[in-house]
Length: 378
Image (cartoon, rainbow, N blue to C red):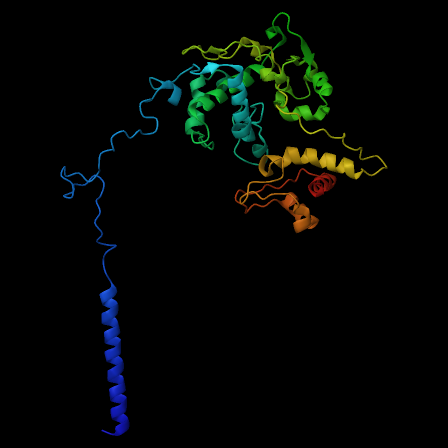
């Protein structure tokens, strides 16, 4: 064997030895602590504990959520497996105000603020929502609404995590108030109560005529000449469904009322169509397209603010702050991305967004101009 052959032989042998040693070191580091860790499996026996159970009993004094309340009507809306028809909380003005607040937050995006099922996201292609003014739901017991809010139904998610039981019942009471207000007649107005034409009352509060159709059920639109509402001087007068309740005594509804019977103050029946619970922003009337004078920037911003309130504020917030990271803020958005990008997003939407943004094909070029003017404003 030559010298070069011997050299190659010993180099090869050294490399093999080094590799084998490395493998032995690595194998020695492979331990089974994670695989063979001491642990117990639920519902299996265990030798670790004297009682032979792997699941340990609760620590003394532990209180589980809802422990002790059981499946009561207040928590389920059910009586003997059937939907009950009573209000288990006191019916007061504060209750209805709280119900109105939570309804407008959680329910109106689908059901609209008057409960006609024509909410903003339904108009944008979401699943159709039920109208509370159908015969079926007008006759439904109160427990039905509580059960659906608690457990969800169809495309509607449950709101048990967002609303406490008493808040859900407050929403239920307000739904019944909406049903009464949207189906009231002149004969329902009690003695000594003054009524006023809805359009006249809206005009006195600074509303433009077309604003009211946004808040009315479709069947009430353009028929306001004969639609009465209370002209109460109460601070609740901005919401006709609640206007006459300000002086209603505190009461608790019976546990078993007949289907369709009002479980709110009878004064609620004196109300007619519902107007917005908060006054929309004041604005100039739309500029006549036939006019030779172009709209001023002030008019554009004012009209854009109204469009933003109607089309965008539901998701991007009235303050334009959005809900990052899913819903972007619109403060300074035109300056950041440019008018062209803003126009494209408004007209085409963002179908891949989470949640997706719909396309607003119903907006004209002048509408988008006004929106952009408002988004540019401080």
